[in-house]
Image (cartoon, rainbow over all chains, first blue to last red):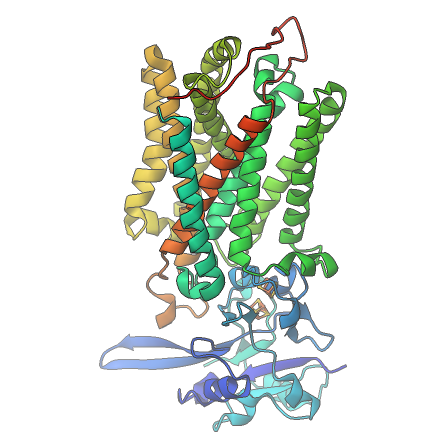
Length: 179
Length: 394
Ligand code: SF4
Ligand code: SF4
């Protein structure tokens, strides 16, 4: 069974928001809901300054606090490592939102705590999630971590990588190439 | 002191306005609540904690008679149990409105995740309600054999449920302000405090309005020094927890924890924190109970009222503070600066009012239709009282 993960090369991100827009369109998200966002970090002081852009979304944590706290298993770990969400079972208790260290979930009009599911329909067709396939700069490389020859593993071997808030102990499935 | 009709009118109005707020929340969802994706748990969660903790507190006081055999509390048993059930039911209303989904309980039953503290909390509070009702029925039947068996179980389940509620917050690793091993313990202590304060208010009204007979009035009077010591002792323990929370927060500078304390030290929660939590929960009760010994009845009732208001606010601030400091998802990012906005909108206040009015109404219905005068376990301690008791007409 493939084990999915994502490698993000944020140094190439232009901040065009194409990933967020593609995600919102694909998932038909309501106005105030997004699964994919960009965080901006300023470095230095004017005029010697720069802006880092960090794409953030559900990290599909291996040890996901949202899975642990979900009373109905509406949020659950799939065999392929993706943290899935079954809206049918969601009670709207928002425990997952309080527990997620990445602010990765959003409540929709139906009071369901939605999140990125890594586009299961696309994966079934052997395609990439829409955020990855949309990105013009190939910032996002989605792939199988189990396959040693996969592109994601090859690229990961060539670069130093890091994760967001590893101190939370969540073991995210998203890595970032270090600057 | 207000007469019975006025109590009914006030409680009825609270329930009616509350019902309007609840309907508004059911129709418009989170749009009419002060929550957001960044602050998902709002005031209704705090109100839920307040009501179920008060219920647990009533059970603690009740257990003094039936579990720890402190006979002087026995005459209050039925009334405390009824008040506890009423508070518990209103707690369930709060969480029901927060979930806004009647099928939620069904999903939890058919697909439970036993690793989730919420499942255990739900199971334990459900069991607590059932056992409490059974206990009450046997109290009304005056069957001490069964009461003696069931009361320790009710107490154990109440403690387990309350500590599990603490764990719902305490196990949230992302929220530094909540994520502590002693969150569960401090929940139990605070529940005990709200139980004592609520019991003082209840007994004060019972005595002042001649709801109880002369012997019980005397017994209530005799309980005053005990209540006074219990209040003072428990306030001191809560103060101890609070002081250590500050020391750990400031010394450890743990993300989330220290940031939340900043909200109290110079942020948007500073005024309510120092006035309602420090003032109403610690300063006012301690001053009254220590320096007003000559008018202990007044010291008790005013410190208890102050405590109930303060604890209510404390619950709200605890829920808010854990989420208002932004999560440091990406250190130094724009979204990690500032403070997350949160508020309590009218529908939420109205829902809290529904809870308060509901507790008063349920209790008054019980007082009217049931015989709440406990026949003593031990005839030597209290005589069986056969007077007819009723609320005084004004
Ligand atoms: S990032 Fe948040 S929502 Fe996604 S798996 Fe981790 S804890 Fe769950
Ligand atoms: S809001 Fe839904 S998905 Fe999240 S913990 Fe509650 S039931 Fe699970």
